[in-house]
Length: 208
Picture 1 (cartoon, one colour):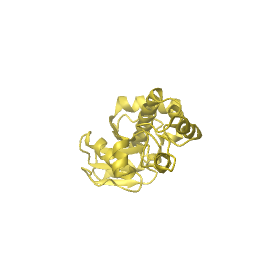
Picture 2: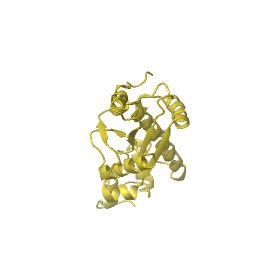
Picture 3: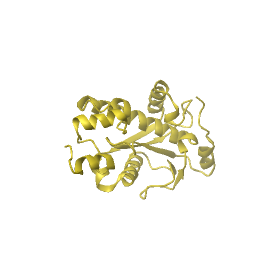
Picture 4: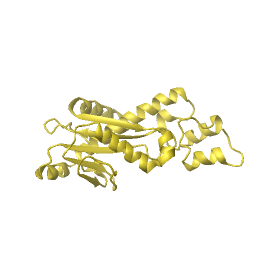
């Protein structure tokens, strides 16, 4: 797998931005589990080869790059749990996860965030980049850290709550997850504000 293009980082560094944080999130769509955001400051002299959108990497390569990024870069990863998601909605929870992950790292000269919207409370100038995990090395690195971290968390939760397939579907609404809900009901890790879960809990004949 080829690397993402580094033109975006290079263009910002030419403007005097030496310290750049790349940010990405994973877990906005699942029915269960937290939303996770990670922030990464790459070492310009030691950028792992093969960085790309985590979804374009197979599991083995993604895990290899996870270790290389952790060894060579400054990394922060933050989960926002289902209680907070249900309280403030998934978009605002995602923004909070991003903000908190950024604040755990040194203040950067510039922040690059995957997507088309910026969180409201950032410590530095920032740019939202659509499909940033295919255009920015630091965002790609953040996407890899976020996915591996959250996938492992969901696999661990699946040991406590078997039958939903979280070790395979990471909390997304697959057929196995739906069957688990029908057989076992809603767990504390399900997002009650999400329509499928809400309907199960508050329909005319709810299953609790």
